[in-house]
Image (tube, rainbow, N blue to C red):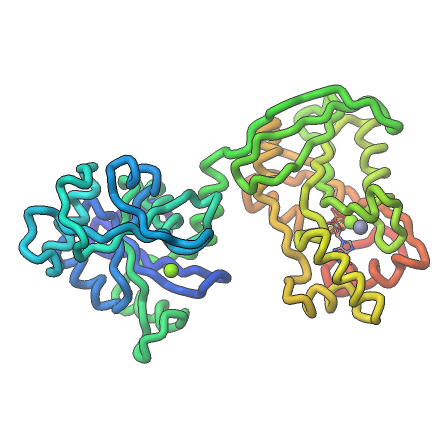
Length: 386
Ligand SMILES: Nc1nc2c(ncn2[C@@H]2O[C@H](COP(=O)(O)OP(=O)(O)OP(=O)(O)O)[C@@H](O)[C@H]2O)c(=O)[nH]1
Ligand SMILES: [Mg+2]
Ligand SMILES: [Mg+2]
Ligand SMILES: [Zn+2]
């Protein structure tokens, strides 16, 4: 279903089933508060979770609603309310009325508290990837105000983490289904949160570049671009993940340092862009990478070591790389990589990968087993024998 079709279903009284795949595996029903009706609220209550109204936290505070203490990253509840002209506030009809009144933008003075409609404050999908934040973006994508009613779907046993039950529930009632990942991807496409902050000359051994730093409200990390102009309509692009040991300390355990040098040389000659991504250790961070090295010293390979530490083999994502390219006005690339996942990720966001150019790295006695594992387990296409 596209956004227009989902909007139609919603206007028809069908809440969206929003599945939190990968995070909590929870499914919530989500519905625009501004058009909440007695019927829809009554139906949502049949899902058995906690019916809440979500709104942007900043706005909730401005309007005088009271936040409850919550730990960093946890659900941000506010004191529940009833619209002042309700009787008890508990009925489906009265909760729907309270929801619509909140969506009208009335201040806290128009409500009694504590009441029967729980409130959740969203802190922005870039800061927290929960149902609360996702529901608010979803409202916006569907053309509604940023207030949603949400409720978890519990199964026969009362469990909230039953994906099949939720899908069945959706089918039975003809409800649209989305994942929080769908919402996140659309968010990344629609909202440009990375902007050029500084652009300076950077002469190097490989040639004369410019280095570009960004204001990054998407993942808040310090990625940079090293650019050689002119780079034309379809620039040569290398997305290089940080490797302190390989890039800076000349480690021979991996091929990163030599790949970086090679890419910079190519870009110096032809023009292009190197995105230097703050994604140390395939996204697990330096400390964890060194822990993984410790396990590799004991005989595990790079994938097994990540696994033993409870990490995915590769935890990188490329939303930031995509938005950096967009900030630089690039929509088509010739990508220097052996890793098909990078090309696939860019294409998902609408960047056209016109050509994939192999990224040769130096093979040493120390990195040969590592490169073999990357080819065998991580799908890398190596332009040389290992
Ligand atoms: N977790 C973990 N990360 C590693 C290990 N060895 C190298 N890395 C990291 O792997 C990443 C390699 O980045 P890239 O060279 O950009 O990516 P790639 O997947 O090799 O893909 P291409 O080089 O483009 O073919 C860097 O972040 C390194 O820090 C290891 O043994 N364990
Ligand atoms: Mg939840
Ligand atoms: Mg590499
Ligand atoms: Zn490396």
